[in-house]
Length: 163
Image (cartoon, rainbow, N blue to C red; front, side, top):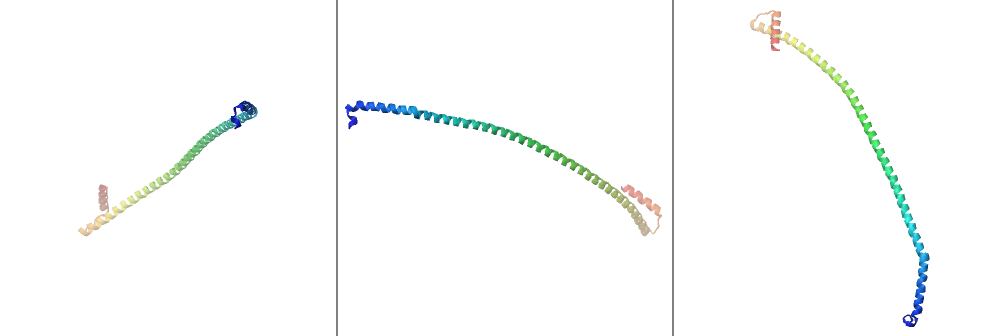
């Protein structure tokens, strides 16, 4: 094999150095700057993406803050509307309750008046029935006829004692 012949080592080493230096010069002149440009471009793209993401995050945070502020205002407004509606319903209920209470009180007063009249009519009727019964009982038992005024007075006194 000619590669292992010690007489050709010098020329092989010479061509090895020439080839190595040529490849080194081509890589250093063309490949490494292009790789550097690609790395810088990627770094710029990444930084641009990070800057855009930060701007979008700031916009999102501002939108969230505005949303929270709007929600708080809406909740406060809803609470005020509900409170106003509750107060209005309470006012209407109080007015209706007052009207119903007045009607019930009128009905109670009318009923008490009717009861008092019925009671007095019943007492008058009891007095007359008791007097007639007493007169009839005396007349059947003793055969006597008593004065109606005396019987009415006796029945009235008995009823006053019974009350």
